[in-house]
Length: 167
Image 1 (cartoon, rainbow, N blue to C red):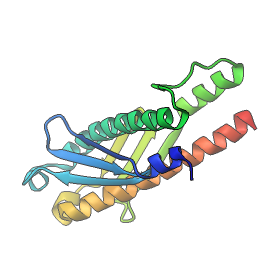
Image 2: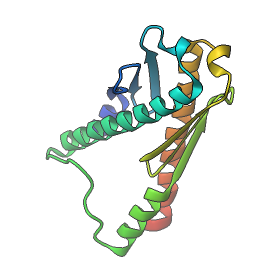
Image 3: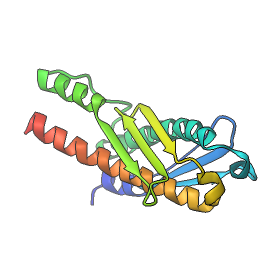
């Protein structure tokens, strides 16, 4: 493998909600791990979790992109801080279609559903009764399953889109 693939496979990104109630870690490309502030999970509601997880997802993805550009910079031995501007009609089409993509993931038990449009507009749904029915470790594992599925879906859709636009 090359430098870039190695860096992406060994990437570790951390983020926390602004109030510190939920922390997350992205290990490698798809492994998302959650932790909760002591006692928070037992006293929160499903709607609280949805809002905080959407915020956390935004922060983790921003951190992931910073780590991605750092890996690109290392691999190409030059500073890269973002995407180049689209320069051709195909580039513009690709950027527009990519920003409209909706990726989805769900936990194996269907308690957690995660979706995102353009990797910017996050939507998390937690089935009613989940906090009462499963503990925080099972919940965190379910979120990890849903997040991994979403990331795989996003990457697969991007690959298909690149093939369609660029052939």
